Picture 1 (tube, one colour):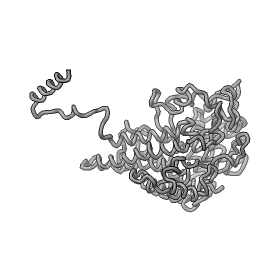
Picture 2 (cartoon, one colour):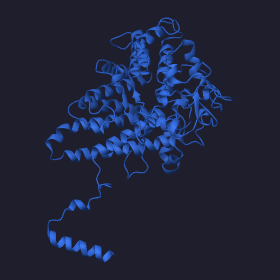
Picture 3 (cartoon, rainbow, N blue to C red):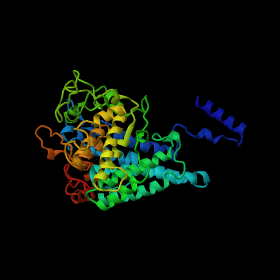
Picture 4 (spheres, one colour):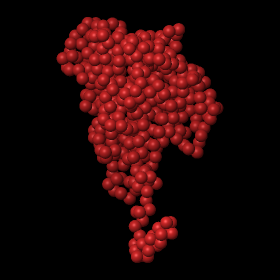
Length: 478
């Protein structure tokens, strides 16, 4: 049979002489080159999937924020970072699956623009999009671990990169964001089909970049108040995400494999690993919070939280809501609610912004309720309660803002956990046999780093005050 095939091919070549279609030699299913847009989309999708997941193997932030309680196996809500290498999964995903892809996207975008006047015109906007996602990824790495590889990261020829100082990285990230903001709206970015967030709307990308700048600026409020105020006021005077239509979130689809990873973890898995945590339910119930029905299901006509840090029965508390199990639930990681609470904090600290602390506080709550299928009337009724209204709610300005921001960040566990780290509020629950001082303020470095990059890893741990899960990050001074 093989000789007949060879003969047929030979005849074909004779008859066609030099007019051979080289395209027939290209494997279209396994291309040797990947377009910049493909790497950009893939790296961006990997980051969003990590931040939206609730798998105990790579994202336990909804547990660390005490939004969910566990059933059967409570290791993660008991803060096991020794036998559970979740930090390693976060590290690998960000460096290997996000940042490396984005580095490749930058290189390819520049090559694609060579000799092409139109592509060259739009190159700065594309590079700004890529850099924005890179800045976001690095900010998560710093906020998770502290000092991390940065200036020597992503060099495949250097397997032992130094760990840069976290505060220095933050300063550079803010500089990079300023460059992003200057360029991101100067031309067309990646085409709509390769932009799963804003479908090519660069004005919304600009708002997202300014909003991330505000977030990073407010992280520095205690550790570098001068830089914090400067950058926060610059952001506050520009276009921000102030309405839910502009939320920075990936548009997931109804069908696998492009669903929200929450659906994969909560539905497709067939498992019942989580129920409502008593920490959150016990905070929301007395406030008659209209978001409870969007967050959880009722149990016997009421909302019941399982004991945080314990092995609960799957029927021992309110189930996670059907809304959270929707396959195409938007994967928002910067929202109008968060931005308004950041502005409320800025106002409370005396920064020059256009509204009052109370005004931004009210708008943060309103945008959160609207985001979770509530109405403007629901928000007005909620805010009218003495226990919610800014002048009469319990605590000082930090406790008021922290409590409501923490409730609003329910589907962004990383920011919920970070809210507690910044303000030491609201009061979380200590798992049985533990104290509040055992609640992690960071993740320890992956074990493999001590094996493969021991000298730099050890130096990084010493520089931040010890490679412990309760070591505070540089911006966490309270």
